[in-house]
Length: 418
Image 1 (cartoon, helix red, strand yellow):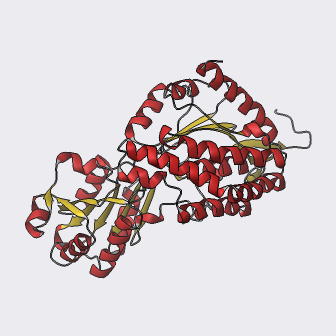
Image 2 (tube, one colour):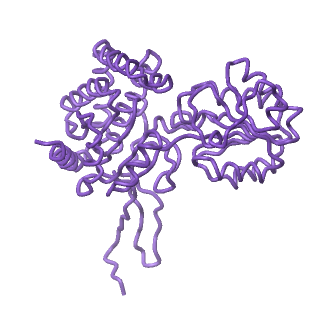
Image 3 (spheres, helix red, strand yellow):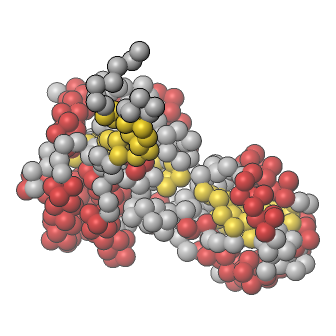
């Protein structure tokens, strides 16, 4: 069987598994989640040995430090991954829930029921914990999943998928509801995105090259989980201490993830009251400041920013900083260079905060909080399959509900259309 035939067969089997999976009870799906957590814990040494193998090969290839950080299944990431399975088991099951019920004038009751999407193909780079997170959310929401991870994580992903499929066999979940493409050939992506007869949705997670390739070649609807060029705007009325703390947390808490701060925009009236303290604190933490001309005048250690810096997702201790005359200019800059991910305003002016929240239409917008809250767990979703930067059909952190759709359900007593 050649690669095209293999992908076609995987998609066909996933579609058949999705039909069975969609009819399972919440209890049955939760049993798989708990058993998967148990099996992964028991296989931790073997899986981490495979992960070390991936890390060694990635380092030999000269893969950048942020990507290596994403690839590693270290103790904290491992614990979060296992806890995520149990957290998803504890979440309410959206499948079968009736919403928006109304009674028509003729007595016909109309509601909408949440149902699975069907088969989801997920194409991602580096992070092997995505294998477990994605499988957990897809199974709980009644969807079969085909996972195509990056070549740099192939040994980790195969080891994780082995345990997830074994847990399925032990809990009467269709084993083919969880499949991983075992080939590292990039041609597998081309074949996967052409399986529109069996796959209902493609979710790419990765760099601009991957997102562009999938978007341009897929015959299947795509929800992009694109780069995070996230902004904070420090308004003239911002509290200096609050601004410093929020900027530091947004930039430093997890630099290698997509909700990290990449560009800081500062109102000109805050350049003497707020900006110096913020830049000093960032510099002391080892962050390189790439600033516009005025920033470089104010802060001698700043490096002049290039035009490309304003649209850059660094995932590193680098921050682009610019000064603007007003909120209008800040909004214009975000619209020009942002990736529709996460933007925050720091202000003590209620009117400015509300204006920012209304005018900026990225998937997550906030006032006086860290960009790091753009996360499924932090927002109460329990977990996320990623952060959608596509406005259809889900936008922002995408949890269980984002992996379902709604069908109309009618209940009548003999009503006829007259």
